[in-house]
Image (tube, rainbow, N blue to C red; front, side):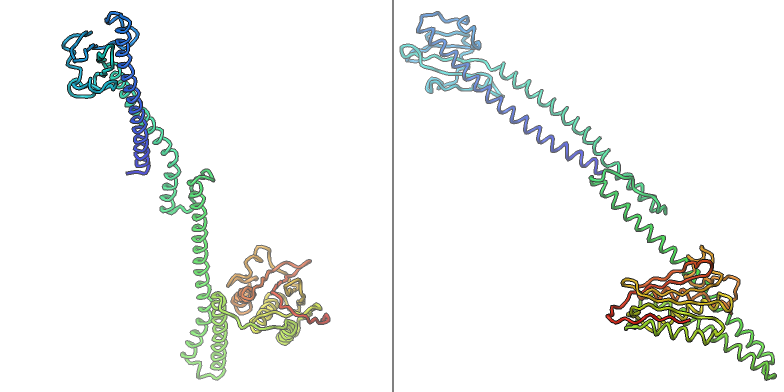
Length: 465
């Protein structure tokens, strides 16, 4: 059974009980009023007879023209004999026995089965006589019958109208639920963009609709994120497989060359062994980078302690000069202490990767300039070069894995495209941010922001290069 039908039936049942109770109460009250009016009428008839006897007025039906017409009236002597009677002798049966023993007390008289049809009374008359009067209640009975019929008709009309109105209102009120069900069916069929139509914000349906729409947005976002993650994972696995396949292919090629007789020529043997070792080291570095990214993705805790970035920058620049002595390096550090809470080895890796990125993707002799300063609660590191830079659209993807700024470079010179991805992961693990932006008139700058560690010590500015 539907909610609408159950609610309609419950509403009609409650209304039927209420209407029935009202009809019953009105019928009982009217019945009491009618009984009181009948008792007053029969008493009035008896008192009229008493007054007529006292004044010597002859008894007749004309005497009761202003009152309810009696069925029978008797005047009895003190001994109980009937002195006078108005009405037929057959109607005398309507006078209940013992009526004269309780004077001035109206009594209902039944004529066969069913409710009382007459009202009788006995009162004191002249000279010890007793006056007995009986009147018909047919008018009162007809009134009650009409009232009952009207009440039943009105109750039926009211209940029918109430049922119709309740069904209509419930249909209109539950229509949003049908739309919600249709939306749920559409979503179950795969249309995650479907939304529940908006309803009045303060209504129950409106609150349910808003809650469902918010839930659907979260679900759609979660599915989109899952799909994006799956796509990144598939692309990552494809790129990683491709990167690993290259050194493995080289190793297999040199091993095949060795099997075909390269071991007989010492020069060829040395060349093959050196190439296998080089490719093995390259593959080992790639695996180490992938493992590092996996650990950072899992948010494993870092070995945090106070790290002085001044010393770290100095060491990184010295190491870069040894590797590429033809390139000019300069740096400028502010007067504030450049101390952060972090993993010194990982933060050094950030600097090394940024400097290595400059070496790999800029022409030889391109200058590099590093700056470090404290800005509010952050340490800001800037690594700038005066190279050709990269397109704007690529700057948004440069920190993705296996993305190379210069697609024309080979893997031997350009790396696997994991250096900047590692930079971002390490900086993010330290609660910082990193971004790339263009340098005017040309060049590229990497800005690293890390939460500073409070220190009361400050050092004079240092400028080198």
